[in-house]
Structures are given as C-alpha cells and as structure tokens.
Image (tube, rainbow over all chains, first blue to last red; front, side):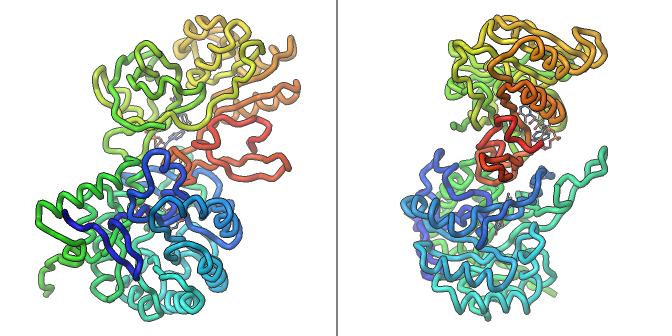
Length: 306
Length: 255
Ligand SMILES: Cc1cc2nc3c(=O)[nH]c(=O)nc-3n(C[C@H](O)[C@H](O)[C@H](O)COP(=O)(O)OP(=O)(O)OC[C@H]3O[C@@H](n4cnc5c(N)ncnc54)[C@H](O)[C@@H]3O)c2cc1C
Ligand SMILES: Cc1cc2nc3c(=O)[nH]c(=O)nc-3n(C[C@H](O)[C@H](O)[C@H](O)COP(=O)(O)O)c2cc1C
Ligand code: FES
C-alpha cells in the first residue's frame, strides 16, 4: 500500500489533494455529496476582515477548456466565519486552510492575528486575487511588496503560513524567493491569470468587472511551468495549483516540484474530481512501486538548457 | 442532490430549435417544481443549468425543455435515446406551492420560461390561469400540456399570429384587473419578470419569479451566480441563484 500522506510546514495531510480556495466555499455544499474527510485538506473561500459583497453579475463565463471569474472576494467576513462556519468545519476531519485577503498590509496582519487564536491549521496569504480594486494582486506582483507583506504577517501569525502567488508576473522564481526569505513556510501557486472576453453582439465585456481570472484545464501548462521554476529556487514546500482535472495532471504537478496540489475548477465539471484524482495517484504509485509522495516531488528530469 | 450518468429516454423537437429531452434518473423524480439540473456537455467545463419541466414517476424520468442557444445546448440537442448524460441535481429551491390545494394562481411564462412552470401549474389544476408569451405562432410550445393540467391557458405573441398581439404581461394586467388571485408565478426574460413583479405588486398579489444567472458550480460553492436581493430590513445583498434560488419573492429582487 503506497503512503499518500504528506507533511507541509509541519502539518500532516492524509493525501496531497486539497480543494482550492473559492471553488469549495466553506465545504457545506459538497459535504452533501461526499465526506470532506476524504480530502487532504480544504483551502477555504477567501476571507477579509469585514464582510464583502463582491462584484455585480455576470461573474463568470466559460472559455475554451476553462473559465473566467470576477467574484471579487464575496465573503461574510472573518468574524461571521469564526462563529457560523468554523465550528462545523472543525468536525469534518480534514486540514483547514484559511485563505486571507486584505486591502492594506495591516488588514492581512489583523486577520492573521485573529485566525492565529482559532482552530484552523494553516493560513494562505492571498496576494494574488485579480478581481478586487484595492490590495489583492497589487501585493503579489513585485518582490518588494511580496516580501513586505509576508514579513509583516509572519511576525504576527502563529500558524504555518502559505503564501499564494500570482501568475501575473514576469519572474515567478524571484517572487517565490522573496516570499521564502520573508518567512513563508510554504508557497502555493498559481492563482488565476487575468483575462477578458467580449460579446460580439453587444460589444460589452462578458464580465461585469471587464476582466477576470482564468482557471481550468487551459492554465495547466502555465501552472506546471511556474511551479517548476519556483520549486527549483526555494527550499520550502510548494503546493501546485492550476488546471488540474485528472490524476495525471496532479502527478505532473508533483513531478514539477509540488509537494501537494489544489484542485478548483475541475470540481465544477465533476464534483468527484478530487476523489478520482486521489484514487488515480494511489494506483499510479502502486503500479510504479512508489512508497511515498516525496519520491515523486520534483523528480522531473529536465533537459540541460543551452 | 445526486450526481451520475443517466440515459436519454426520449428526444423530441417541440418547435424549431426547442428540444424536449427525457432522462431516466430515479433521484430526480422527487424534484420540487422550479428546481433545475446541471448537465455536462462534452468538451465544456461548465454544466448547463436547465429547469426540470416535469417528472414521470412510472418511468423514473424527468424532462428538460431547452432552446438551442450556443455550443452547449447545440451538443445537447443532438443527443438521442440511450446516450448517457452527466447530470447533477436536482438543484436549488423551487416554487412555494403551499396551499395549492385550495388557492388560485396565475402563471406567466415568456418563451423558454414556460417549461419551468408546468409542474407547478399541475398542482393547481383548474385553479390556475396560465399566460404564455411567444414570438410567433410557430414558437408556441407546451400548449396542450398546460391545458392538460386543467388550467385555463391564454397565449400572447409579438406578431399576433396566435392569441393576443403584444406582451404576455398585458394579459397579466388584464387578468388581475378582472379578478384577484392568491399568487403569481413568473419565469422568462428579466424585463418580463420585472414587469410581472410590478403588476402583481400594484394589485397587491404575492409574486414569485425564477431567475437566471451564469453559473459555475451550481451548488452554492463558487458564488458566481450572484443576484441582488433585498432583505426584510431593506438592505440589498448578493444572494446566489443556484442555492438561494432560482425562485425568489419578486418584491425582494432588485431588478
Ligand atoms: C436556473 C436556470 C434554469 C434554466 N432553465 C432553462 C430551461 O429550462 N430551458 C432553457 O432553454 N434554458 C434554461 N436556462 C438557460 C440555459 O442555461 C442557457 O441557455 C444555456 O446554459 C446556454 O448554454 P449554451 O452553451 O448553449 O450557450 P453559450 O452562450 O455558448 O453558453 C456559454 C456559457 O454561458 C452560460 N449561459 C448562457 N446563457 C445563459 C443563461 N441564459 N443563463 C445562465 N447561463 C447562461 C452557459 O451555461 C455557458 O456556461 C436556465 C438557466 C438557469 C440559470
Ligand atoms: C470562482 C473562483 C473563485 C476563486 N476564489 C479565490 C479566492 O477567494 N482566493 C484565492 O486565493 N483563490 C481563488 N480562486 C483561485 C483558485 O483557488 C485557483 O488558484 C485557480 O482557480 C486555479 O486552479 P484551477 O484551475 O484548479 O481552478 C478562485 C477561483 C475561482 C474559479
Ligand atoms: S453557481 Fe456556484 S454559487 Fe451558484
């Protein structure tokens, strides 16, 4: 029997498949279809200090092998989450990762302080949301700002800290390095790629925010490349996200250097996508006589570049 | 809510580009009128939301009636008997039909907004008036089916080729001027819903509307299908059509 468990920043996961933030809510909906304890973990919907209404509709549109969204971080705020959702989530038997966003550096720090006292397992710093006017991605696109916000939060956060990186940057490896040297315990990437579609008939953008974030199978190659580049530069574990819909995609992500994966948009097509991915990884390991996930992580054999 | 692959039992073209598809699916037989399903179309990542038009307990089947609009509905329209469809549902919450054994109702359907009303109208029998609007006589659908529920059915067409010439909401205004009813149920394009809501409110009649919004998950997890809804204290908040709806109280919808 292969061992699917992984440990990231000291937190044990029973398997390396985690639901991606914003695609799984606070878990209640999909809990009607399968026990959440079958998942390695859940990255919960992005939280902010105060409740947020999010953007007007339309908030999503399908694209070739993917989708754009501009939800804009609609959430009930951290206080309501702690009161209404966390107690139930805690009983579900899976690792809980709180994804946090803010419009100022101080917002991120306050959130980290509040959640440090709560029974959550890890924090994921969302400095990569392309759909909010203030904050979000603005923190995630230069080494200086990534370093500054990570350092500030690290000082006031008692939980293991994942920094979630934006793909909308030129040099992902340097950004990864900046987060690591500022004290990140792990990295996750990628968030969505900014994109746009226009309706030919009305000449209106198809999203209310004009632009949105691209996710789904279409982004897999970009995500694999970025995880490969980032993982090669840092020593902390990397969680690979972006376009994973089959177990083969997940194994590819591990080969590129990920220690675990997150799955988002694939759940919309197939609510059981994560279950199938977990089962697929397990049989792949059995067939190839692999005992532990870490034997796969980073074992891509790249060509010598010239 | 269940999920699986279920076979097509019957496919029929009701009017040009309007398809009725019966799907054998034991779990959907207990669907409440107004609920919908998410159907996966080959090669497309997002499920197409389609309302359940009616269910058939004997054959353990339900049917959707849809208009071919884009790639998804085009693919779906080409499915035939025996082919398996990937279905998630029933989803959302349907119409409030409490008191349907004694109350009177008026149903207002615009075009492809007619099918989602059929199962609800059935519950009211002859205590229902059904007002349906279409572009032209050739696009009229489900006329016999609505009549078969015992309801009194009235048609409006844009060009006057069948029934009243004009808007279906004109029929609603005239109907409510003539006599009161307990509740109005409406499904169709947004402008029609907003007009129906206004007319019902002016007559002091409760009205429920079924809304559409672009969806990704269909279950309430992704928050993509937002629609602005007024709460009891007058505050306006985004609620989600797939989970909190698709049916809402008309006077709470911010049109
Ligand atoms: C709750 C609900 C119930 C519905 N019931 C019916 C029904 O019974 N019969 C029927 O004909 N239509 C119904 N619709 C509309 C139907 O979902 C769309 O016509 C269909 O998704 C179009 O898909 P497409 O690939 O053919 O078009 P495309 O325009 O190519 O679709 C592109 C994307 O936009 C989405 N989309 C396009 N139009 C709509 C729309 N009006 N509402 C929501 N999403 C849309 C699609 O799902 C897809 O993700 C319903 C919509 C909702 C939200
Ligand atoms: C509808 C939607 C909402 C999202 N919300 C968040 C969010 O709140 N916080 C966040 O860090 N990422 C959010 N994301 C990004 C995902 O977590 C993930 O990084 C991205 O979708 C790529 O993975 P995928 O291709 O598997 O979906 C969201 C994505 C989608 C599609
Ligand atoms: S479609 Fe995901 S919340 Fe409604």
